[in-house]
Amino acid sequence: MAISDHVDLPQFMDGLKRRNPGETEFHQAVYEVAANVFDFIADKEIYHSQQILRRIAEPDRVISFRVCWEDDQGNIRVNRGYRVQNNNSIGPYKGGLRFHPSVNQSILKFLAFEQTFKNSLTGLPMGGAKGGADFNPKGKSDGEVMRFCQAFMTELYRHVGEDMDVPAGDIGVGAREIGYLFGQWKRLTNKFTGVLTGKGRAFGGSPIRTEATGYGTVYMLQDMLLQAGHDIEGKTALVSGSGNVATYAIEKLNQSGAKVVTASDSTGFIYDPDGIDDERLAYLMDLKTNRRGKIEEYAREFGVEFHAGQRPWIVAADLALPSATQNEISQDDARTLIKNGVVAVSEGANMPTVQEGVQDFTEARVLFAPSKAANAGGVAISGLEMSQNSTRMTWTEDELQTQLRSIMANIHAQCLEYGSAPDGYVDYVKGANVAGFVKVADAMIAYGVV
Ligand code: NDP
Image 1: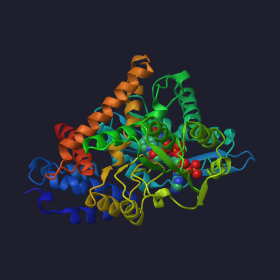
Image 2: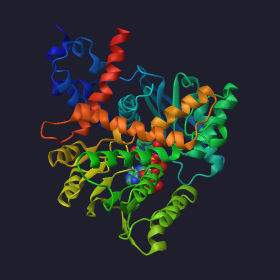
Image 3: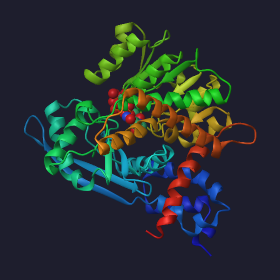
């Protein structure tokens, strides 16, 4: 008899918590997947006897390293860098790098675990990984950021490669950081290969990579609404964040005829009842991306409300797109959104809703697209950047826009296949978890015990 015949979900989670003490974000991410997968595999002996869930929840490896660099005053600074390579069953490891003071092993293990299923959903050959450092780029000069990136890559380069592990950006890692990281990789290896994605267009980057996550999150929303007989046009939307994902989600929402009334950063949110139109969005992008300012400046510029230290979920709206960071929708926030009549939620950020909030949305029959499905557009275009780099070709923007739209539609279709309930409601969380799991699990079974 297989060991797992004796293990139920609480026992499985107890074991996971024992082996990964204190890693609460990682526990949360595994629980969300395991809760759905346990039901799905109940009558499928092969997944039990092969211990697939237990194996998927153990990263292939966790690499941690010291990053030493000098600041502008000549002081020696020390940070901790990581790369978590979760699973490469269906392709080379792939996932972003995050530079933020909150980065720790638990957060990167949760992100690498999620990435494995997300990448599987895209239909492209990519495994799951994530990395980063507890380095805070805020307030640092370009020279300091460059020296940090060079020191970080001086260790990371031995663990990555175009057919092994291909990192990208994430919070705190944008075009500037990817440029410095790629420059150092090239210097160390004397090779010009697609080892990073999200590169500048002049050196191997793909059209629409910057837009892809935000656009994809809105495509998912459109498909969910259409499936349920709603139209996005005329709907009011709440967006949190004002970085890469948030701003391009706002752009696509505007193009779709929705009205976005909020945006936020780590200091608070702005409420613009007339909508963040294209002109105001251009101001916001310049403020946050080029000038690296605080969102309060937007409120001052356009004479709208700024709510210091708060998140947008108290505002009544039809749609919510959390696009800042993990666990930014608490259970109370979810209940407020439901009370105010939210119709659909599409997660631009990774795991932005706490577990209890997800349950409340599901019970209230709110259309809810979890991050691994909703924000997969970015990594999908990264996967296509890898293909372009391998063939030394560049596809046109139109070709990539068409591919992105079709990949998101395909993810939506997979969620329908595995998540449709008898009453017609689509449980996108279940659909995404099971669809993402099956492909990775079947590949693992094919490899035997490795
Ligand atoms: P950016 O660094 O471009 O922007 C992050 C935004 O979130 C900023 O507005 C930032 O505010 C805000 N923020 C960060 N941390 C917090 C916090 N603790 N509380 C409140 N606000 C916070 O990152 P991205 O837009 O790239 O990423 C946002 C989310 O989307 C992350 O969860 C990321 O993992 C996920 N994601 C990103 C992808 C991509 O392609 N970029 C792909 C898939 C997922 P401030 O400016 O004040 O720091």
